[in-house]
Length: 214
View 1 (spheres, rainbow, N blue to C red):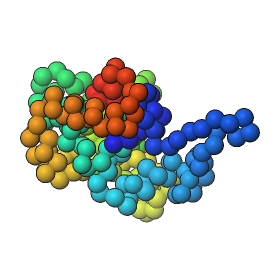
View 2 (cartoon, one colour):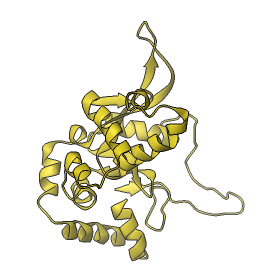
View 3 (cartoon, one colour):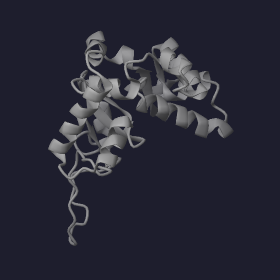
View 4 (cartoon, rainbow, N blue to C red):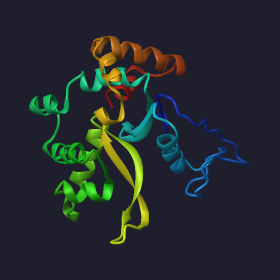
């Protein structure tokens, strides 16, 4: 598991302060260099690995969870419920259902198509769509899986790449969900807390719970 900015937990990049070089970091945004541009890192993870999920996971910001740790977050955030069960229990919004149904039906759908197909593409609906998309990622119902350009009538790609989303059930194999079902919410919380404190002994309980619950 991991994040970008630490929010009192931890960060994948160590930022140091120095008057001569106030932001001493290898990060170089929007250069297109796969070695130093974080925008490229997220796609490298999805293209080169099958055991790491990337999405808006922590504090409504993007981050990573490895396959080994994903069951613990499933047990805490979803408590091993399917989307349908969570929706029936009132734990997921109606807008989130509109978006989720499209992703599930399409299996994998780029962001530009998802907006239109979910009937939340109007300008005044942007905030509703964005909230639903974040909600589904944070609650571990959908995750990013690739990137894709828009297609011309001749089938050629053009423009900026869009993130492609899929359901978590399509992204990870069944054994991840079986493992999640093997322990309780309390056991999962305790396991994640122990790992956080190993990485950051100064982490505060309130921050840890926000990290765990999303």
